[in-house]
Image (tube, rainbow, N blue to C red):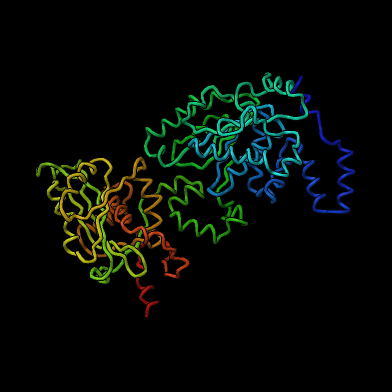
Length: 529
């Protein structure tokens, strides 16, 4: 068979490699080690990959990632796929990219398909793989005979290679044989929605990497669309004998990773940021200090999902927040602004309807430490005329220090904004959030800002503040209009949300559960005395 010729041809015999290794070991131990690893990398097995990775990256494979590679080989041996579920920043994609390059070096006559959430990111990663083949000096040492075939294609439309040990006509026949890649590109990266996925049959490897994002998990409809694409378009590309890898981090219940796990057709390895006993799985990069930093930046809920791989903890009720003494808020000198989530009814009688949303307009002030203090607001069911008066209220009360109100234009807000903007002097600024769901918006932005003390809630006893605090404690199972207005308010102070409070030395309270909303103000006041 033609394929057996490819695997039997070697650049160096074992005896030649041993002799060269002994000679170099005496003259240059470091080069001798590289020669040893080059020999190891010429074997298509996990140990060979570990050597290849170290040659390409200049450092060993992280210990936690070795299991991923071993599972990929184990799954391929029994004609199954492998699912690698791992925490954010765990070097999943780097391991995967170098693995694809490794396979291409050993089986250049086969085809490889990388599928990601969008065409752009998939093209970027396949370009990185192509760059290894084209330019990396260690590639040229391990696989000197595998080179770009630019006449056939070398770009986003597909990267082709050739094996120079073959006559070119013989090489093309091998590629077109039942053991080769057929009409598929040698390597191509595509978004999961791309029509170009249809008809692809990667004979060397299919890799699906993080095909979920905020948009396609925003609703059950979007989620179903991903699953339909996975089962109707991506799964049919799978070829018996090829390496199959599904890589990512869980987003929500019922997502693509869960679907694949439940089929029983994949071996599954799960790598959270901690081992058992809360021992960091990768202490060289994610030690306790770095993990704590990521927890503060992401917020408890998002940290549970992205780093602990714990969707149940990520689904706990309530948002953590801290309060600030109402009497200490300086509305005369501190800069003020507002945030509005619009809703109105046309008839006064409809205001009593339980099905109506609340009009929510919150306003706050930025203290000398650069934090946003929510001062008060209006959260009620109102007519459009009442909503207009409510928008004017803080501007008239705090005119000199008042900036504007951020006004959400999604849904009904777009038509309302067109009406309100015609009011002379009314300072409102529109924004849209697109397809990002309310829940994701609150989890990935508001939760960290509240937990880190970048946004504090006044402890004042007003209807709007009482409503807001209740909404935060009951989130996401109560009215979210006030929480949306809080998000809009935060957008009015973008400069406050990028202050690195840790490096600035501003005291931040220890994170506690949401009902223990002790204020950090006392610590700040003590520090200033």
